[in-house]
Image (cartoon, rainbow, N blue to C red; front, side, top):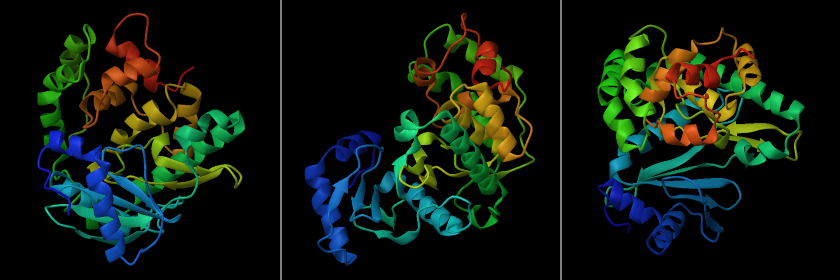
Length: 310
C-alpha cells in the first residue's frame, strides 16, 4: 500500500521512489484483472503515470491531488467521443488506500507533438496547427454545465482578483528576474480583463506536449490528453498555452490557429496578463525558451509572443 502523502515535498519525494510505487501499481493492476501485462513508467509528469500493456494508462493521485483526480475522471467521461480529436477513455477510477486514487484510461496512439515536431515538414506543421485549433474550438463549444461542480471556479472575476493579489509574490518565488518582476503590477493594472461573460470548458495546458500524433498514419493528430487541471472560464485563458507552447511566438502560425479556430485574434496585452495570472505560470522558463524584446518591457513582450502581425 502506498504511504500517505500530504505535502508537495512528500509528493516530490514519492514520485521518484519507484521501489515504493511499482509494487502498488502492480497490485492495482492485479485487482483490475490486468495480470501479466507489461508495466512501464512514463518519464515525464508531476504525478506517477504508467503504461499498462500497449493500450492502457494508469495514473496515480495522492490525497493532496484528490480534487484533480475526481475532476480528470469526470472530464474524461464527459468528453469521450465528443471532440474531433480522441481523448482518453475512462475505464476505471477508485480509491487505493491512504488517500490515493487512480484512473485507468485508454492510451492515445503515437508520440507527443513536442517530440515529433522537429521531424515534421512545414506543411505538416501547418496542418497540426489547424487540427489542434479545430479541437480547441470544439472543446470550448461544449456544454460545461455538468462539470460546473468540479471544474470551477464558480466566480471568474473573483478568481482573477485572487491571482492579481498574489501575482508579485508568486513570480518572486518563481525566480522572475528584475526588471521584469517589478514591472508586473503596473502592467496587470493597465490591462482590463473580463470578470464575467463568455465562459467555456478550458484545458488550461493546451500544448504540443499534450497532443499526440501517429507518425505512421499520415502524420495527423491522434489525440488530446491531461485534463487534470481543467477549468471553466474565459476561453482566452487557453490561448496562453497556445501562444507559448503550440505556435511558440510565431505570428503566422498563431494567425493560422485563430483562423482555424474561427475567431478574431485576442488582444496580445490581455493574453500576457493571463500569462502572468495563470495558475501554472513560469515566466523564467518562457523568457528562456522564447524570443524576448531588446529591452525588458512587458508591452513589447506581449506583442512578440501573442501578436498575429508579421
